[in-house]
Image 1 (cartoon, rainbow, N blue to C red):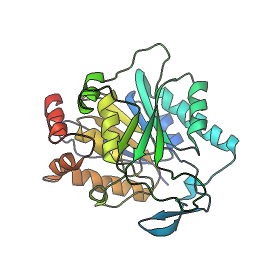
Image 2: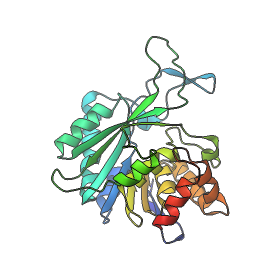
Image 3: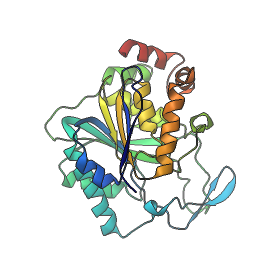
Image 4: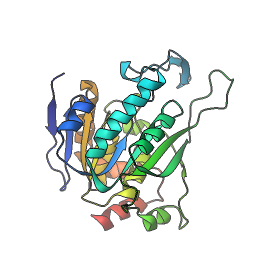
Amino acid sequence: MARSKWEAPSSEGVEFTLIKDDTFKALKKLDTKFDMVFADPPYFLSNDGLTIKSGKIVSVNKAEWDKSGSSAEVDKFNTRWLSLVRNNMKDNATIWISGTSHNIFSIGQALKKLNFKILNIITWEKNNPPPNFACRTFTHSTEQIIWARKEQNTAHLYNYKLMKEINENKQMKDVWKLPAVAKWETKSGKHPTQKPLSVLSRIILSSTSPGNTILDPFTGTSTTGISANLLGRNFVGIDNDNEAIELSKLRKNELDSKNSKKEYISKMRGFKEGQLQRIIEENL
């Protein structure tokens, strides 16, 4: 596929840029230094297994990009993209990477190899996980999200007081109980690995400031970008899948349509009633 770039009309002073290209090629061409990165790389769990979704037995396979390779191939892939992303981060920037047991250990080793400092491993407990199909293990109800900073000895941003406020004035723990993607988040269509706005919004609020610029090198349908713009941050997303890019555009246009922002804010989980709206108003 040929490389292309799409920039949404500036909305309320924030930017939303999509680059349709191979992630590795695109990262080499970027000339922006980012304040934060969120990455949802392939989990490599498309192994012809079965699961249950909406009460139906379905294949776990997603696409060719999610096909499992050897351990060496997975390690090489993760080290390569993380190395390129590192070059595009500010010295005080942090990165968040989601995963499961299929890829998270490889990512952890790659982060150490590249001299990142791991700050936390968030356990996202889903309110509504699919049941265990095989009935031979515990139900898989969590994903891990590694939070790391670029430099070992350079201070990073953490909005401690805001996270404490969101958590009923208690220190926020590294276990987050939040729902998976809701139907209202998929009006324009759904990506097979789409993340919920509630998770991305918490990540962005915790580790960035209004006006910061966020990168997602595996953007899918750009939940990162929707959350970023909703919270007054700029966004650059990369994906080589044309359908994902087109869905990202639809979601951005939906966000900018009349009353959509109010709907997003009112339906977002993880906040007390009216809390997110007030946080946005106070910080923009």
